[in-house]
Image (cartoon, rainbow, N blue to C red):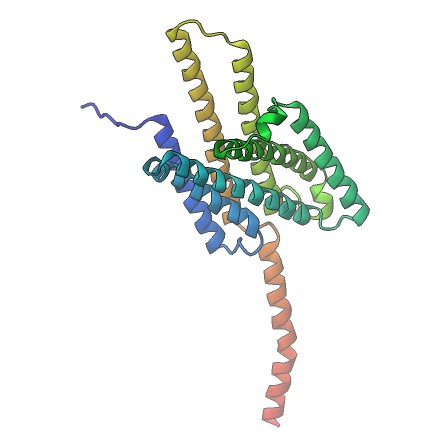
Length: 277
């Protein structure tokens, strides 16, 4: 007996990714992680909303309305991601001094700005300042694209710093903060690698026949699917890591309970002696 499943790789990855996002939200809610990582939780909810909107709603809207909705959600996602980086940095280096904070922030932003300037083409000034609704949408799209690249580079930098120096400030390998940052850095590395590969393909591959075009498109789809698979793997990593408590948390709770019990003991004995007398 032969079974035929009419599902493409894109549909399978979309379904698994959306299910993983829902499970991760349940973990964040059920294990009380939202209180500690509110902006990270908001970014997961935003990603789920983006996936749901692009899959089920955009095809039912007019073209201009769909573009506006998608760009608005994408811009909000970039803003939330920037707040996630601030949240992760504060939790990772909460013991650092003010000077170290200032120097580190300036270095991270400077490296991100340099990469942003020299990676990828920038449109002409006339294109940016052109009038018309579509020109404004192109400008917004450019801002989202460059903002995504900038936050991706800063995420990788922050993940590297957390791996090297996080333990000194109380955010070691087993902490939820560093594991979230490792996942974010992995996703950003995958996205930047995909962006660079597609740009290199566009610059160096010359297409002369329909067969060559189909082969290039097939390769591009495989690269996109591989990048989506990396994001799915990171979601599973976050689900597993955030489900369990950080090492030492249970021991600390048991120690506090033991202290309370021992402190209440003498009072109970004294009360009992007073009753007997």
